[in-house]
Length: 232
Image: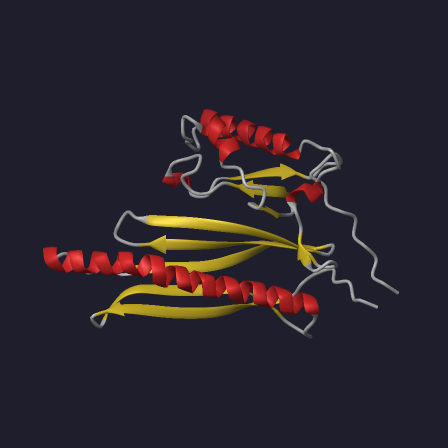
């Protein structure tokens, strides 16, 4: 019978690349992404391919989007006798939940260029190890539950708390931005609850990075499914 995994064991696989203009390095990329360990299965092969494709997509993004910017900055620096810049792009990951047949993590890239310019981009993934596919955010709420309204209300309450305490600052339009920029794919699980996030700049200034909100697990959702017994 098909084996049911309670946890997924992985190790990082790394890749690095450097681009030059006229023999001078202008852009460097470093990648660390998860790779399943142990005997191969349809699930581990699928997950391995998924993150290998993400690795290749990130390198293409660096070459086709960041490299032209780095080359332009390099030539501008030559013309004005400024220090030559070297852009850097990093892609890494963090596993946030790995039990009960669910494996959840986020990958995050960081781009740095000339002083004062940086960008974070985050992506969340939650895998059902029994089915072998990603899990939709709605799966953690009862059928018919207004889960989006619940999440937006939780985020609004947390923003009001943070601003009242003076520990964070958001755009004046954050109430509208919460609805407009919400993406049901931007979530991951943790021991504390279901965490959902917004892109950098979308609801807050750059200094706030990637805004994250966590809704604790509860009977009415979000709720983790009961662990399934292994097949006999």
